[in-house]
Length: 269
Image (cartoon, rainbow, N blue to C red; front, side, top):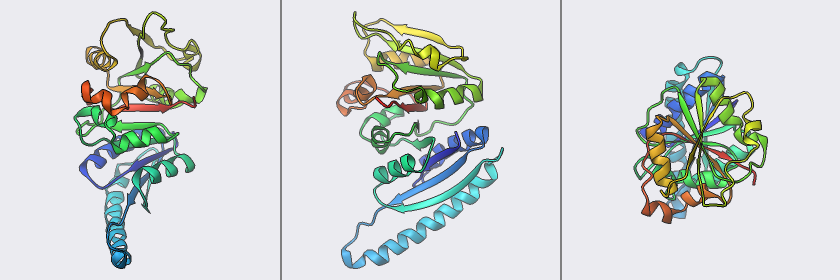
């Protein structure tokens, strides 16, 4: 996990997400890129002046944030700042996917807990459009070394061995417990991909299969609480149960209010 991309708007929420990125970077000796995207909303005649002031303010805020962040780094970790004119989702996705980022770490806003990820937020838009893994941090969630990670999987096959690489790296780096959660989807449910054992070779993990009639949202929320999970990991397919969770109509009806960090891995399928 060499390169970590952290979008910021210089808010407390973004600074909290940065604390996670710093902790992970210190563990791996990573390079952090702080990324600020801005747009100009003014009549044409004032654009040049307004943009100059926005850029100057951004540069000042970025330097202050870098000065605050650098003393926190260790183990060879480094940080740089980058301000970019453009829409946040498009700019961030392009920077991550074309700039060699191994992980995006960003905060969520709006709804309580992780529900903010699934309600059409900026984080939601980034996850659905990027090829880069995303670590989403709910507002108010404070960093603590990971002790028990849950990997929630549906019945779809994994497209490539690299899908689980960030999870494997975190499990090894933090020497954490790993559990694989699966919510059955009817009598024809095939369980998790048998290749999972191969992709997780050398890592001990436990299985948890839920055969209840509860919704996926309700089941996951109960599981996370009952088993003292401190990081939830999901795999984002273009079509699958996670994609369903990301649809606003689902989360308007069902609460998904856990305040745990969420690691979303991107599958090629």
